[in-house]
Image (cartoon, rainbow, N blue to C red; front, side, top):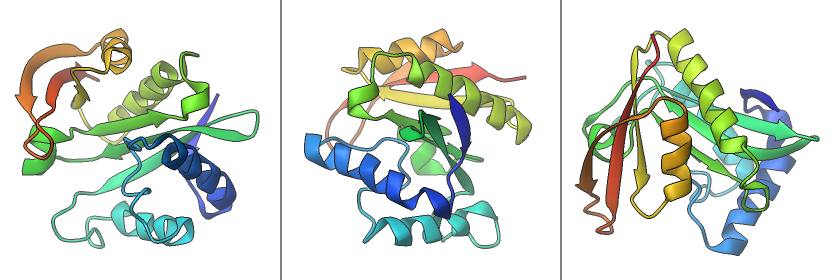
Length: 171
């Protein structure tokens, strides 16, 4: 699996990824607003704003978005937030990720998270907060397999979902 920052050259593959989630009526975790963006081109442009503390939009934190690629196809997205604001501290964490629906159960999530944790360490983070919905046992297993230590549970006020919160030491 290739794991790297998303780029403008990925536009067509990102569109395919986005369409797969829309077709399944699923949330794109780690998509950094991909589902809500007016277009993939606009989303890719907007991501450049998050690269620097000086250009990140108000209310957001500096972040980087990565793609997982297998056989020339984007099969996963991971968003690494380099710090936490109040919202992320309670409901989002440092890392959000998703795997394309037709590529699940193949170890991609675990490999992506491992690579994302290496990037977090390279960016100077020492402890990384991750969350998953209580109902998402696959994501909980991926987090735990990558060293996630269960911290607590919290209710997401936006939809009432119970979220599991984990910390991972990346030192």
